[in-house]
Image 1 (tube, protein in one colour):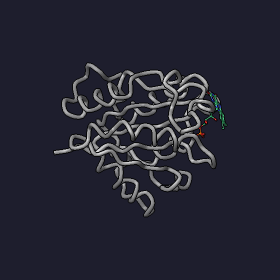
Image 2 (tube, protein in one colour):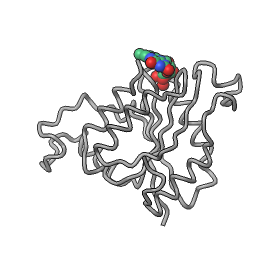
Image 3 (tube, helix red, strand yellow):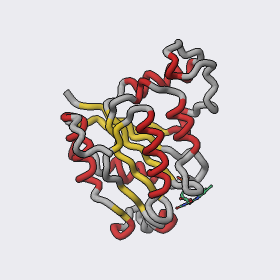
Length: 189
Ligand SMILES: Cc1cc2nc3c(=O)[nH]c(=O)nc-3n(C[C@H](O)[C@H](O)[C@H](O)COP(=O)(O)O)c2cc1C
């Protein structure tokens, strides 16, 4: 049976680069069709308010708000994730932190590929985000994908310039696929 992977766009601001990065990523998923069903999740459209549940998600209490119940359903049905994260002041985006904080058990045990972009490939952002994801039980792949100098990474045809990419996107999707089917600890951080 095919696995479901949610590709989460972590920036929500106007004129964001995140959408173009996600589009570029999705173009590389076609050869995995049948094995993995990749679904884009745009946090700008999910539009969660700042975390407003009365009880901590790890308490086991019922969620109160409909937006939390909807978000819980969306993340529960995923087998794994691709996080598309910008770098803001050496950190990851507040939208991603908020989206993670809403839930707890829904994330647990699921592998994730990190895709970062910024001036140097978002290494600071991804490092910080890994710590938070690991706390909620996500298993980020050890290797990550970076896009450097994002403001000039796409050419006039909207294609991502090869020299800006750090990492092999198809090989990393293959690693995610391996993780989804085996769950082995060898390739996780
Ligand atoms: C508030 C803010 C802070 C930023 N800080 C960093 C940074 O610390 N490191 C970096 O590489 N890029 C930084 N940038 C540049 C972003 O990586 C770049 O603008 C990128 O396009 C942001 O992603 P987005 O367009 O999807 O929001 C920053 C951008 C913003 C808006």
